[in-house]
View 1 (cartoon, rainbow, N blue to C red):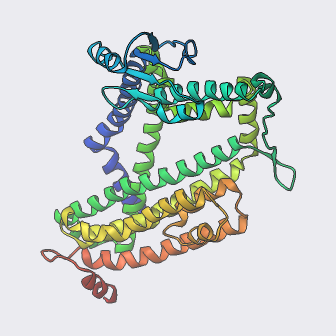
View 2 (tube, rainbow, N blue to C red):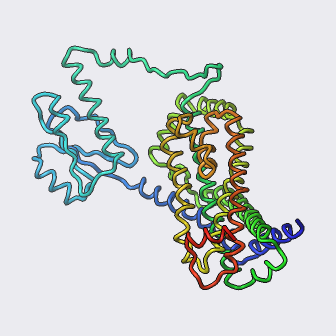
View 3 (cartoon, one colour):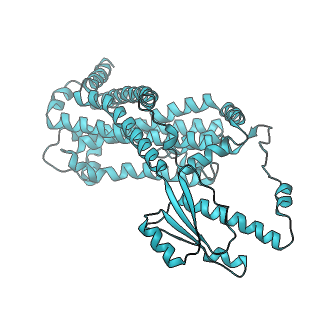
Length: 437
């Protein structure tokens, strides 16, 4: 066991003292925050660009319906033909020309309104234009039918269903969004951690094998201890780097916007802004109160504990496979043939999580994949926020760690033979032979 501690310590210190490791630890958060800040800056420039739209309204229904905004100016054209209006708009480099023809009845108007522009207009501009026209046309249709549109608007009743479990616990759409966000983030973090630091373990094994250092080490240490030491030591280095990234990015994301005056809201897409408005409908205080209520409803202790267990188990499982691949090849270019069987379950887990778990977290497919050890770390993490029985979580963890132990044994047999094999490209047939030694 002393050998294992020494190997873990050696692997950890070797990684954290490496110049490239130190540089990337501090440089990655700077690059990430720099990219976010650049996106926010470019978004602010894009949103501040003024758009001038000419309107040729031959119907006469929309003489004062279009109101100017901070970034959009509407100019009405009169006594002009469509061809002249198009020519003038193009020569003056206007954002676009909205043409509303004269029609015999309002039902024809929906099919004949045309927006002319140099390039395809933005979705937000078209949505605003269509909303204004649709609202006014509906009012006119009601008036022509002898119906008071204002009275109908006053009589409209908004229905918002109250959500509650059979046990009396209140839920809401915001709660479902929070559960989806936590599950998706947890699964994505594990996926990225496995890819980044699994490759680090594999490269470490290849480097020691090609430099023949491994021949000296293996003379006094059992292969399985060496394998576990490399996995655990590299994992601890990865956790250290990950924590440093989190801290540095948190500090930079707070400081940079204050220094350069960047508005973080500019980085939100229209869909995100609409979602925030929906979550806070009824006022900011109501939105905050609803957010706090849903946060309290989440099984936070269960989420944290299971996140750590599945995170550790899932990473160790895949890390042992990466180490076995590193021992089986002589260079990183030879690893491609063995990478697909590792990446496929990971990608399958992500797709199952996105297309199945988030739609029906307690369905048959979601449950089955949350017990398969190669997909359970991602799938189960996405299911847990929606309320998974404890026995299912425990059973999934037990299966995961039992599979990890079996995988380490499997990987150690490949590792024992592979680290001393040179000059011969390994194949799946060769790996099967090594398992029999």
